[in-house]
Image (cartoon, rainbow, N blue to C red):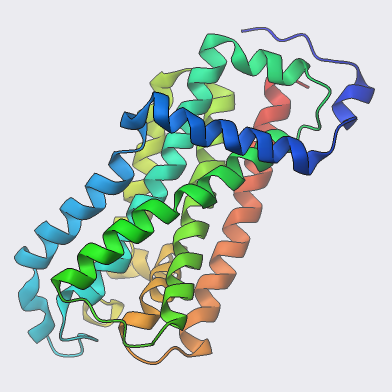
Length: 268
């Protein structure tokens, strides 16, 4: 697909980046009404995960050093982060549809700053996280999950979920801008499974063995999951949170650079 780039002055932007970003985010929310199937995985997969894992792995709570006696306290934050990651994948797939249908060409020709084309989807995914966050959390609490750390645990969980969605959205947008086709969807999806399930998804790092422990130790998602679970495993401390916050900050920055460079490659 070829795109005629607008004049350099238009690329700099004549409109306000914030206003344009909000409008793009609103458009993304409206698209859920037209194509709800793109959003279902972010809710259905996490619900399936907590139902399947809480039954199959309930005996893990008897393992020495396991940090909780309630298995849902371990798996509910994981499920919410997984659902949030799928929101990011959905954003990338939506971008490929816009590219294939030609709608993205019109965005590139508009006198709007390039950064707004990333800020809008970024704002959209953070808002979308509210749905799986709420639905999966309510199901988990109904099943017996306990928020040991109090209301602050909801904050740390939402920060981890929103950050996970944002990182995966920027990563998938970068892939979409380079591949320009929905055939790139498997590459986007594999990023979710490799980052999450090669971390402390099933068990804590202290009870892991072999190569998986070595990979999980250096996987930034391990720290993000620690941040997400902080309010479910006891009192919230800075030691439990700083690693996840740092990992998310670095990951968002790197993924943002990747997405912006890919966008400039699509239309200099």
